[in-house]
Length: 108
Image (cartoon, rainbow, N blue to C red; front, side, top):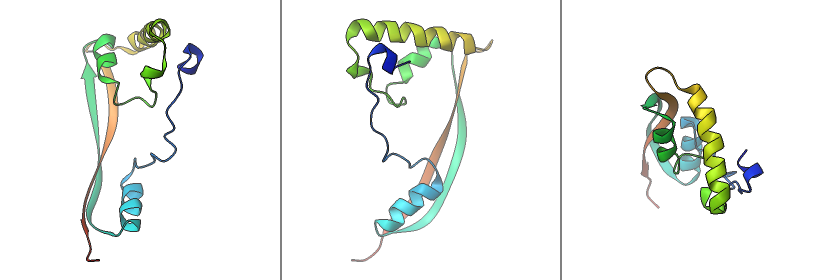
């Protein structure tokens, strides 16, 4: 839908650090010693679709800045329509995974 509104998706092909194993592999390759690695699931409940939209700039894999203002407003409207359909009685639920890794750089 984003591309249909004229947007260009960011190239996140190098952004595969979404599991402890992936982060551990990248840090190990960079010369770090891994002390601890884990992942934690968490949920956020936004009161409505607009509150959800206000939080997405750092979360979506798209760059809204690539959309002309009129297209951005149409895109926003279309997305909010979809998100409103997903709203439960208590709000819009969004589940995420946080990856935590503690590492130290070894001697050179």
